[in-house]
Amino acid sequence: MSMEDIIYPGFNKSLKELNCIEKISKNTYGIIDFTDIEWVRSALSESAKSIDSSIKFDFRKPTQEQLDLVLNKVGADKTPEQIKDSFNDGKRVIGISSGKGGVGKSTVTSLLALAYASKGKKVGIVDADIWGYSIPKILGAKFPPIPFSNRIFPSKINDINVISMEYFVKQDEAVIWRGPMLHKAIEQFLFEVIWEDIDILLIDMPPGTGDVSISLSQLLNFFETIIVTTPQSNATLVAERAGIMSKKVNSSIIGVIENMSFMKVDDSIIHPFGQGGGSSLAEKLEVPLIGQMPLDNLIAKYCEKGRLQDITSDKIFHDIIKFSDKIDSIAPKKKPISLKIN
Image (cartoon, helix red, strand yellow):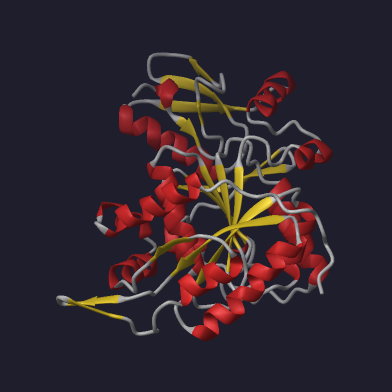
């Protein structure tokens, strides 16, 4: 790899593509610094040293002309109205929803993101669970988003772009927000974050049918929904309500994923939470059952370590890829827009 091939953190483009590198001397390159963020400069310098330890970067401020060219190149030059009007263009937007918490919705979202990334797709995740955000922890997405000209580049880990409340509150603080503030946060996550380069955007929804779910239905022209449940009747009953809500707003339910379906113990398979809940829910909602995920200790361990991407080398990941293949084969049926929630 050459110096020109180094990827500018957050921008998802090489120094050559951004036209921001110039050789000054044998061991020094001039780099246009678009962010004025210390860790971004450090990351660029470390990338250079991994190629040639003698190389030094001389960081310079961009001219207005250089800034305008990059704004256009990364899609950050649009007005708020243009962003909203064209948000669905070129990308598939899928909300991962559930009726209740604790069913593994965030884990399913992260696994699907990894599956799509492994297939060469450019993937984004909006962690819309404002109170119970967990996506950055699961994936190990530690580096914060990068502000750029009144927009934000999402955090990036293993080719997956992530935005979450995790990056904006202290670890020991609780998010105590109601309707208007939640609505504004979701609006910023959607329209102030630079998602132009994304093929598929997964939205990790909060459980239930509250303010955040309603806000998404008002802010997006159209999105699809996958319902996650466990086999228990209590879980499927509450998940059905989330499905009913999706039918009342501008979303299309495309399928159900049953999580914690079974456990493999030695040579036996047991069903600690019962059987048939996912199939029953899919039948009631008149959508396909995308698949059943086991209660797997390996997944739990990787999530705890913030290394879920390590699951991609395990046999179970092949099933997750099959889930994504099935989602790809399902054509969404767009519903009439109706924002009235009974």
